[in-house]
Every structure is written in C-alpha cells, then in structure tokens.
Image (cartoon, rainbow, N blue to C red; front, top):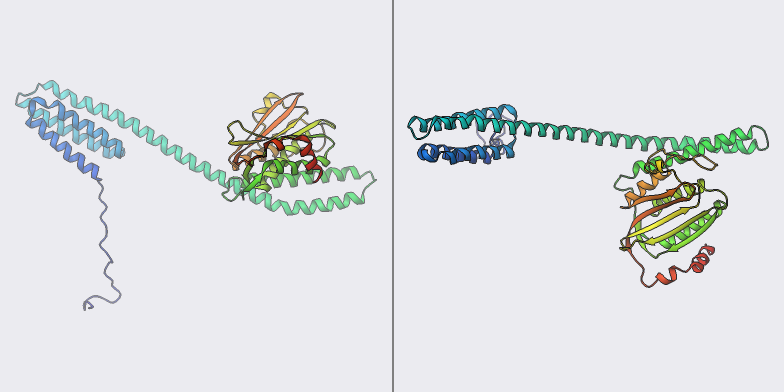
Length: 382
C-alpha cells in the first residue's frame, strides 16, 4: 500500500542507519570498574589503597588497548585525578586517612603521563616507519616498472641498430674502418645483453616470473656443458654429478648458469680449467651446482659486493661485461628459493655455488652418476 502523502520518488531507507559509538566495550567496562572502586574507597575507607591502585592500574591497561590521542588522554587523566582525590579527600575529612594519602594522586598521574609520553613517541615512530616503508615500496615498484618499460622499449631499436651495424661490418671487412665498426657492434651487443638482463632482474619479484617444472639437474648440467664447451678454448671438465631433481624454470635457470659460465670464460685464459659439478648437500635438502675456474680470482675487497648491480671486476681481455650477470644469477636463485655463494682467492680461481632446493632424488642411480667415463660419453652424444 502506497502512503498517499509521500511525494513521488521518495523512498524509505532500506534499514535504519547504524550508530557509531565513540566508545568501545572496554571503555564501558573500565568506567564501571572504576566507579565500583571509587565506591570501595569511600565505603572501605581504611582499605582505600587497594581500590585506588586498581583504578590507576586499570587505566594504564586501558590505555595500552586504546592509545588515545593527547587531548582525550588529558581529559581522562583529569577526571581520574579529580574523582580519586575527591574520594580520598572524603576519607581524610572523616578522619579515616591522613592528608598525606592525597600525595599519591599527583604521583600516580605523573607516572601515567610519563608512560603516555613514551607510548606516543613509539606510536609516532611506528607511523613514520610505516610511511617510509610504504614510500620505499612505491619507489621500488616505480623503479621496477621503469626498468621493465625501458628495457622492453630499447630492445627493438638496439636490435635494429645492431643488425645494420653487422651488415656494415661485413661490407667494410678488410678496410681501415672495419675496426671502428667492430667497436660499434660490440657495444651494441653489450647494450642488448644489458637490456635483457635488466628486464629479467626487474621481473624477478613478479609472482609469475617462474614457470617451474621438474628438472634433473645432473642431466641438465650435461646439456649445458655440451653447449658451452665449443664456445671457448678452455679446459672444460665435468666433475661429479649427483642425481637430483629440482623444481625450476629451465629458461630462467639457463640464464643464470650462462651468466656464471660467461663470467668464468671472461676471467680465464686459454687452456685454463672450467669445471661444472652438481653435489647434494649433506642433509639432502639442497643441490649445489658449482661452476669453478682456475682463473685470476677475485680480490677479497670485491667479494662482499660481487653480486651487486653494475659491479665489474678486472678481466683478462675480450669484451667488457654488463655488470649485471651475477646480479641476475642472485635474482634467479632467490626466485627459486635458493641462493648463490662465491669462494675465491686472487691467482687461484673462483668457485660459484648455485644452491637450489631438492624436490626428489632418483633411486638407485648414485653409483652410475659418479662414473666419469660414462658422463663424458653422454656429453659426446649431444
């Protein structure tokens, strides 16, 4: 039935608006508790110390739950001081207590206000830390988006420029200008590698960065060994290969291993050893993929910062590195729930360990996996 006097278009509210009380149930409970203790101060005048301290202790506990701002806290403190002083004053007036008992009121108030001051300082520090954390998170997200966008947008023009430079280098072969164009080709290739690695590092924190699948790390290492051995005149050695299975993204893992091997080639001379191994940790929970070389090694001062971005050490020659290879290795390792470590001494070579969680161990294959002749035979078949 329509109300005849209601104007057209007017609607009753679907439900009554909710009333938001400024007090919580803990406030109401504290008020009731304090009133009961005030009555106890007056009624049991010779035992006023106990209910008096109950009021102040409960106020401290209440403030720990609520942490009011300064103005409401001052009002509550004033009310508590007045009411407790009045109740004790009543006892003093009737001769049940001495006037010295009134001194406890300002003392308790001073102690409470000191606690409030510390709590407000801590609250302000927590708020400041949250603001700084949020701002840092925003800046990191902005930086990551910028790196992704810049790397993606630069990829096409660098590839086009590199293609034209390589064509020009072919036409200028044997002429004096050939050396200059080779420098251009080398720097453009370095720029392309830098952009690709920046893109991978920036994307390493994204939830969909990895597409993991079970990977037999010993067989995977043999594949990598067979791919890299013809690329550089080094003494390539395939070390011990423990049969382990990890859950990894083959493409991302390949980028990390390639960066480690590229670093090993860059810091070794012709004929020096580069060794690949896969070892199971003593607890059986982690696989250690080791890339060791007999090159120039790393200075102790550089070890702590070797995995930072754009850190490039000295090298024996060849093309200059991007300074992002080892940073990419660390990003990929951590994305897999692992880590990367390095052990090196100047003049004695370096050993990089890629630590990855083990998913499973193939049964009854350990003895065969340690056979060096069989491993080399499998490599020759690639």
